[in-house]
Image (tube, rainbow, N blue to C red):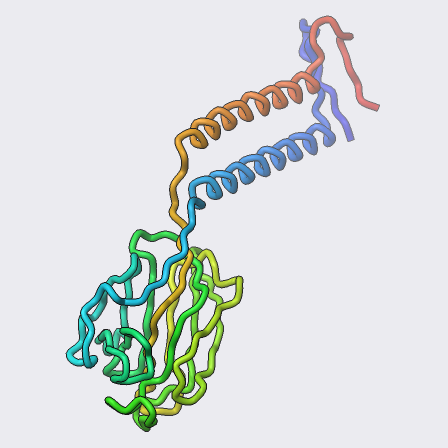
Length: 261
């Protein structure tokens, strides 16, 4: 249904119709889609950057016979580590003390092992692989510990929106093995390793964690180009808006009345 309103004494007429309302709704949807696209572009430009691969081997920390603990939280290789809140004791163990690790390895001891890591600078990162194994008898890595034996690990990656991805790995008895994550373990803000097992306090050791960290740096040239493009798109969109208004208005050189069929 259409309705025409004529303003007396003027050659300018406005056409108000259901079709006009629909056009404005389409215009609003288009502007929303355009703004959403630019937000995505901005997040990609400023959320992405140069990546580098690193191996966290805890060689930059003091190590020994795993006692006493180093700290309740620590940093190594550009990453922060924290333990189980109920018992956050972290220690760096020499080879042969609690496992057949070939170099210093990290353990969250005291209660069941829960180890959380995140980039010290807050960058996103990917987890590629790590070495791990259950805690064994003290100074006898070939003997199982009934209290601390762990059968595997649950690895939980957390994304910036709070959602998670989970993978589970089984230990080969007392062996010290490498475990590789799937390709989807990327773009993370943190990773939590939790010991699995039937022991009273299942614990594990971990070492040589391979990560790929993304440094959030935008180049100055890209930033200026983005600004110019942004304002250019605004001007173009303004032109489209004015065009829609002109199509809704009969200007003086047109007939006095414009009635829709």
